[in-house]
Image (cartoon, rainbow, N blue to C red; front, side, top):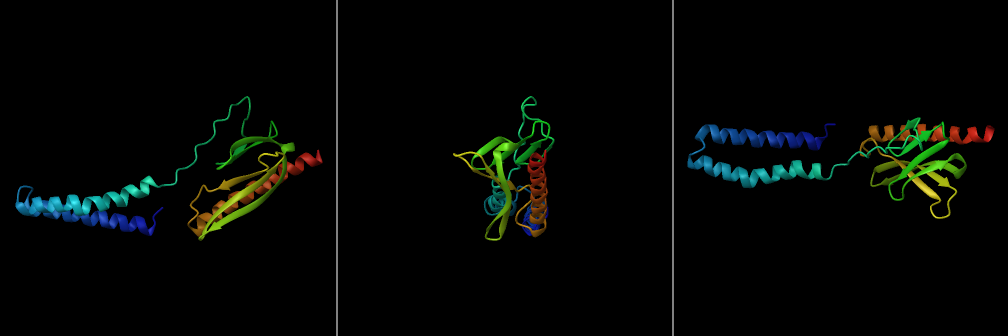
Length: 178
């Protein structure tokens, strides 16, 4: 996705490379002016460019690795980054970023609702699952597959959360009707 930061970063990098090529091709690599230009490039231009490219790479948001479920224990019928549903075994798998991951039978789930956390304009959509457990009765399942800094992709996260909410409500109601 092209953001303003990426455009500016590419423009600065292109300008720095254009300047370096002009210094090398005008004066050669042995002239005093070129040596000074290369030293200037090395100290004044190279380190800011390294920061422009290195820091975003260092602090990038990594996509979560998918859970490798053992087939004899859990075979996901449908899954997402932090939640999966096995209709054959009547089990769900959830991952809370703080508490870890857990398999739940249908009888263990008391209630499920939608929620969102808004911090300085960054919205994180989540499912809130209440379970039959005295130690950890409340689990949060985040939906953060798409960037939460843009309204369009935040709406996609919200849509995915709402789909899973409807799916989980139908799954819970199915148990009460049969």
